[in-house]
Length: 424
Ligand SMILES: Cc1ncc(COP(=O)(O)O)c(C=O)c1O
Image 1: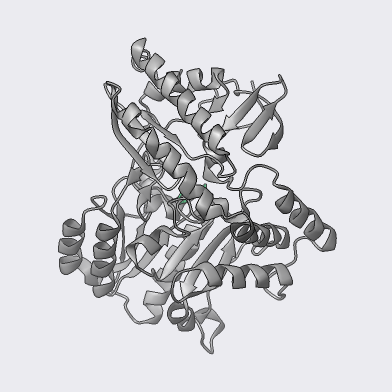
Image 2: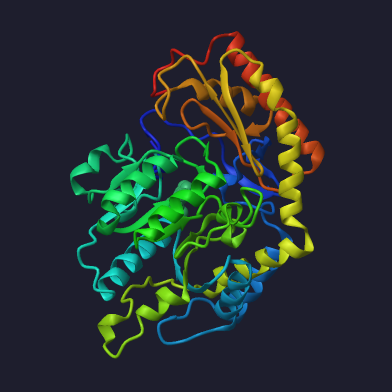
């Protein structure tokens, strides 16, 4: 039995896929000699490829210069450079950045900032957070409270604060809700354009804009959780750009350091930032983490931002997306495959015929067949998806798509996509 408690895993009878000894570009090298293409960018974090030389250099140089220092009383070049770099690429007036540890903490920070800001504005009757059905914002208690109530939250339901959940990507429902209850809402939090953990559900930019406008009209803050969608994953640097909206708060993590180190960041507008300026200490945002603004993480993130210019990262995302899209019809033609979708360099489809949802074992067989052919994927129940590092060459991308196509066909032919117990 392993002494390592692996995340999101039933450890009874568990054996890891392998032991990673090296990773380079889009590939993971295992101790038994296998080389796997990392088809999900190690949980959507890795952007430019594993152990990218520019990121390795930035990290080692910064570690040699100085490591963690307390950001409460000091500033430093890596944090200043990163903040300037982010503000330059962030939409509109998002021009202040608070650093934390990961995606969940970036969400906690946004929720707390929104709550405190409404209090400062004297809007004390506002007591609700609003989110989308099916949404996922992290695993800490505040972030879970604004996430879907499902198999992940079931053991903790009594611990969570109530939130209001609106149907995903439905502007009419949002407009009706905000017209009636908008005055009670602290903030609405959304995964713009793509609900990741909910099976890569894709939404429309127009609907997002209408939902944003309904929330803003009602005086609620709007939080864009771009932990998964940020840094180009949807084809533009930020998903909100496609809807032409500027949220009050924007959460980032995952790809911020190019996928090298854990870091969270929450950007906000000057308007919101200024509310916290006051004569009393307690009117400031009294929140922080020991590693807030870690210089090594900041240096990695600065180096990652530079790669967008030197390596044309957004163009690569576009090119990979085009290749993925060229396979859509072949997947859609398979009986047992539904709702083939693509956004940026993300490609997904559903396997039908089973119970659906995260406990549906349908994806397991496709995963096993992909692994035999050197492709690592991690289906979300019956949802198969790809979100690879964008250093993939065109040839590697074609190979990846063909492996997935073959594996899906074989799994469907042998009808092995259903009938397995969730424990397998
Ligand atoms: C949209 C979104 N928000 C927040 C999180 C939580 O991030 P982390 O796992 O880094 O805490 C995730 C993780 O998948 C996510 O997809």
